[in-house]
Length: 455
Picture 1 (tube, rainbow, N blue to C red):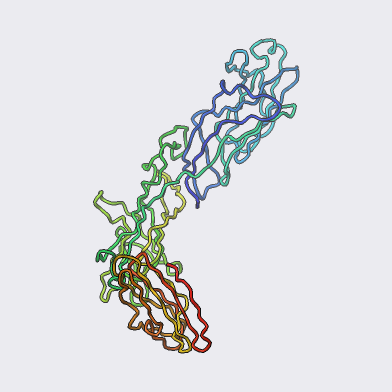
Picture 2 (cartoon, rainbow, N blue to C red; picture 1 turned 120 degrees about the vertical axis):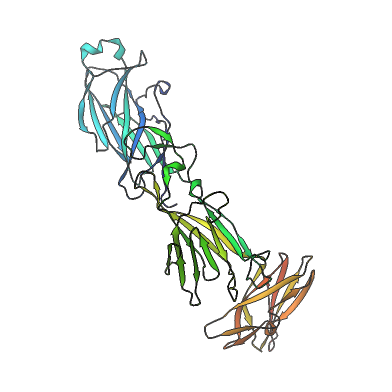
């Protein structure tokens, strides 16, 4: 996953250890889901909650000694020191308790621990409301470590009794896609110079950053200056400086997205116009993110058009899109780059890959193609050669397989080879139900090599 906006899910505290936590039914456990604005490039995340997260530190049994409460946090530091509140068990109310509390003995803001002394004044303890009281640790502001996946807290008392648990988990918040991918099929009829239906254009993906936001999440104010919580939606994002980077084979046809277009010249050099760049090392094109004017505006699609003279051969392949430089509105904080598959170009054929085809006169190499469909099927063949070898399509390199029939093609009729006697071949057949077999016979030993060609 790449870095994404983070969701903070604040979980209920899990009590463990020897001394009992205060009754959870009488303790506040907020359960926020917060879309964090601070992302890559920062040292920490400021978490500011609307209310204290109350974690019960356990019951105090006053025995005339000073009670020590230590609070440790892992995965974060305290932005401000946590608070301690005494809750009277027999009334279920929060009491001032200031006469029981001393100043923090160590730790505090900017650290991952704090130690409190709870002083027991016998004149106060005679007040029945404090008998067997509970101490509540209130967490408000945490600075969460950048790489943390969770924040845990541990509370320890003078006797070494411990309660601990997870108070915060960090998860990916942007789980939806920013595009809708579509596959386009080039037609074998016409030797893959147009798309199915005779169309010379096709769209592969529609880019829409508005789909990124997960519904139902809350967000902090973008400047993180107060604790107000609001509904997180696409209005919190800015795409004014966003970029889209497309990857794939752009060596044929003319391509466009938004205000940009690009194509390769006869030397394979790709030029981008209308704003954008081409990186020859990665083969990727980066252009400005486009916001369509209205619902009828389809320029937010990645499009290909094939109208040149002569027409280019449309090649099969898969495409990708990276969305970057999306920002949280009113800040300079960027959402980390997101990547998606952006559709594929396919052929409307069964593709038969033949790894080895020879015209060596010592061998009689033949292919058997069976069309099990109810319609005649056109086929065409392309070749891959070794360095210094030239393959010229033969009289049977393209043709028709009758419906419900089989044809046999000799290798010498399929291709003429100069500089060698072997090639690889791909036969594209305009039918789905095709069976193919390769058979090579050594005319000296009569040894036969037969195998099924898988689609």
